[in-house]
Length: 163
Image (tube, rainbow, N blue to C red; front, side, top):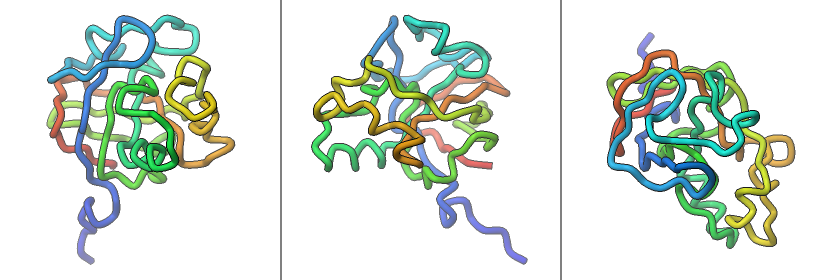
């Protein structure tokens, strides 16, 4: 039996953008970043009760979802929803809690949960309707949090593989 190629199954993508901020949104594009067990070096969150920490060290989102939201008229852009890594090429419906993701040649992460959208990202949506990223209301449209299993450097253009 032959092995299915990741690209054929929606399991292969690329890092489009790496995003950091000193707290809050939008997070801004970076040329590269060092990822540790506690997140991207230089990235900060205002409310660490709901953002950051080992189980929420990394926030990931799909470029294809962002583009589809733009087609709906939302003024969202990469980094606007607070994601640390914007990824293209993955079948986002496969990015679920428990799946492991390789980022570049060094990093291994595991999705821990869907993120809950909050009022801080309302500016990126028509009529401030940030619930458009709610997993409960719109399954498959949420950003996800991940824990870092193996840290390392990442940069735009790096391969992303779902395991």
